[in-house]
Length: 111
Length: 406
Image (cartoon, rainbow over all chains, first blue to last red; front, side):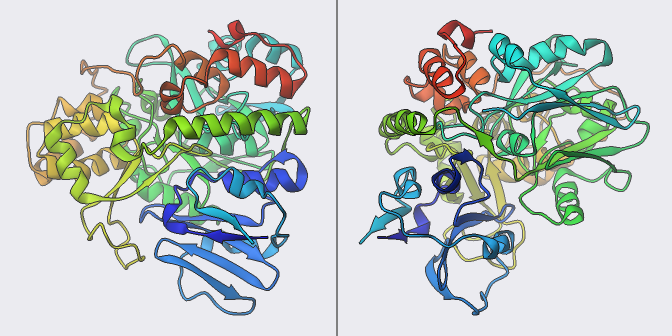
């Protein structure tokens, strides 16, 4: 199982951060998720990042792309999500809470 | 569902005290506006402002964004509760304090920096006179975190106008009560919050099962509602709606809410542009649709977004100041707003006074539970009975529906 990201559907609610953290620790926090929201608030440029074993998926307003570990993102956007490098990678759990609690289909679980 | 302590801040002495949030106190007052009021009464001789969370704020219960600001309104003379949506309520709990009581007055401009069970009093002299956007950027830069959530004032609050509003980062919110003037009176430029806290739940498995069923019901009832269609309470006239539709960029929701009723308007850039450009301020987030409607009825519809931006930057209540505007164009209206916010005397506003959200039988329960009132007004399953059931299940305490009434 893995998570497909369609960032144009994101409404910046952060339910995925909460849900993934709850899956890991059974507490409410946003800090232990493999997913991080990012937001350039004044410019309304927002999306999410999903950490994987060998890199991360950047879900930007203009689309999603995989950035391999060691590669540098080509944009200043997402500076607020830099701490994701410290997070545990997605363990590709079955019936993932992040997708179950995403209200828009921005995150979908796929085989 | 709550942190172990609430915080009592004395601006006069620069001291902060952690006070245990006792189980019996929660049983009696539940949370949100109701518990805020109990705290207000405890400290009422020291001119308190209480910022508090509801029992479900920061949890996975749908719409769990709400923070409530409680104080005596300079406008009405009565104790009032302002709903703060977006992310500030949730961030408060993550700082380690579910409630903060701010009492007395600082000798010099100050901002309160709450983070990870630490309360810092920070000199805000350099921020005094800055608008809310400049000050928000400065505080985030100073503390090195751009997800800091702020309750902040602009010039209107500094000048103690009863039309002043406490702004949430860059955007207006539920303060229709002149609380911005109270911040100004206290020399309090902002309350800044960021935390890595964790909240425990009594029975995680039962909670997840119940809250997922509720989530599915809420999402089904929200359906495709988004943008201004999801903010139908705001009474936005057709010409304003048409102008806004041409400027609409994306829609957003509050923390953990499936209802994206906040609309970002771009008027300094093509709204279809999704890439991040060099334009640092392409528009405004219509965080307060009723306020936007009030401004849009006062000025030309295509100027409403730009004028609303100035309202937010100056820290004004859009509903209060809309009736003061005579110019129809953006430049003229902005000049009037600047003059208004610079008033040296605390002007008493007699403008139309309105709640930010529609009256609803579920409103009271939402203010106590910590649930977004816009969502609660739309979704009938977010009600006192459901809140009581979930609160009992997840805390081990016993609540009935009456607990979610003031």
